Image 1 (spheres, rainbow, N blue to C red):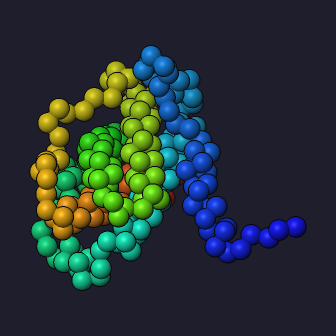
Image 2: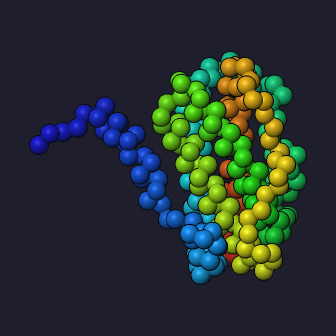
Image 3: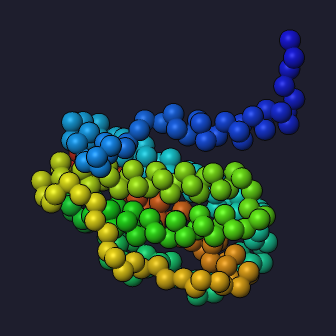
Length: 231
């Protein structure tokens, strides 16, 4: 029987990654007509579990994408420069709690709305990032696949959070609305280094915010089962 070499196994793992990612429990709430009628049929507990799983996967893949981008394009001195320079994250202006004390004190309603604000704030920037990477001839296919997957799954996460807000808070219509004037502004043709650092900043900031989404949702889950022992 022919045995695969280490290199062959690595190649197969790369080729199968997009397929393996699609095997996770789906969260897509939309039907062909665009209605949000599937998720309301799921229990609140199961929907929250699916939303958390989705957020976990998004954070994991964003972390992998950021590491891959660093390995390919950003030498360590530039990583330090990015950390020391004024590359502010696009969601910095949002009223999102950041310290552990603030997060512990906010209500379930504000946890959910914070997650929704973060999700919706990143949909447009991730589309820009995908376009920017598509025009980068040096960008590997794996990086393109990962960022595309995250961009698509973020929309599914938005749909799930909208329905979760309806179920848990009994407020609002089952629609996902976004501001026409986004937080994200960009030039049409930035210089190469500036473009590279901008893409790196987007990936780094999204990874951080994806971790916040996951943390907020897990805290919400904890409060459903053990209100007084959620750290």
